[in-house]
Image (cartoon, rainbow, N blue to C red):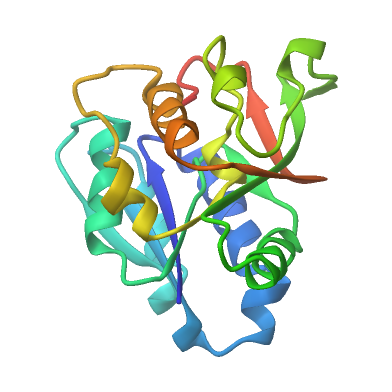
Length: 211
């Protein structure tokens, strides 16, 4: 089973499109519903987030917590998840429809791989931008590459569940850069495999950007 975890906080304006990008995954369309689950972790939203999630019926599992931050929301998702594979999607990002199927093909072909991540399409304030050279992605043992800056976008990654048992979850004491901290711990213990096809759209430039 694949567990998709969407942490969110007051992102009602983005959320419908984000959820649709999950439901439109060709892997999920082809496979039995027992092979995946979708969890939305609402970190204390005060907008109409709940109503938007509920409009999708039983396709989405909605969980509300008092506002504790993005790390706590992701960790709650991990605690609730039942899948052998974990995928996160920040509630301002989008997946291309073949994202999960390409990653699952890779993981099935390389059963010793614990994590893979993909290239990204960047949009800032509605405009496509080219990543700087320093944001180039690498594959394999990339610990020295992730020390200077955060290269592993959680929205682009697919993990085998045991990674979180061995590396630990997200540090709830960190108000920001929790993904950078996790990426360092991850790359210290495991090779991180890069798939060069751009399979996610990262939208940034808004003041409440998660990472």
